[in-house]
Length: 178
Image 1 (cartoon, one colour):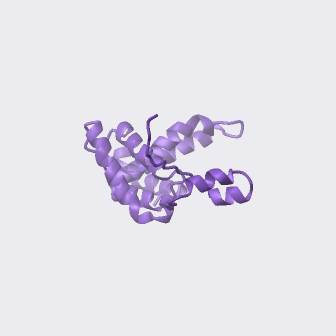
Image 2 (cartoon, rainbow, N blue to C red; image 1 turned 60 degrees about the vertical axis):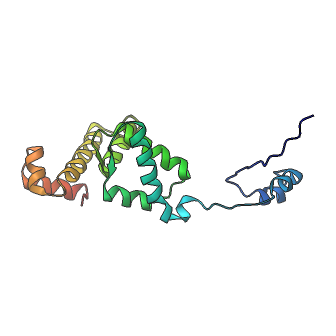
Image 3 (tube, rainbow, N blue to C red; image 1 turned 180 degrees about the horizontal axis):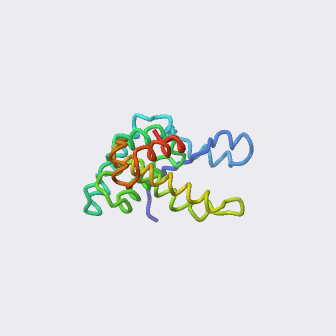
């Protein structure tokens, strides 16, 4: 017989003591596992860790995929205020997806909006959507991207999209793009 000395480390996103009280988790197993409890708060409860995690994962995936991507300040701010319901795993997967799918070295908010919109375009087409609704959604997406690329410069947007500045202003107001 071989003696084995080990510690089992377990994790749960549920309150096991509450589950024991509700008779949904075995009490004997809970007391065997509950030797040294360590509570790690959700990422949304420790926002100061979000940016360092982003930089850690960005560095990790840049090295892994031989890239040199970086996130804009606007995107970092967006991610800082996002609640991350999937916690660190969701953050890690998000950064990896951005490194793999965004063509530019500088990743901005528009890149995630465009990615989400393109993946949901077919879902947006239903019996209540007409062609004008679909085209409006696409126009808004194009304007957001141009706004981001031109850093809000109306003249540059007009030149890029080959329409008048007045037309750009009307459309920005229509879609409430600021």
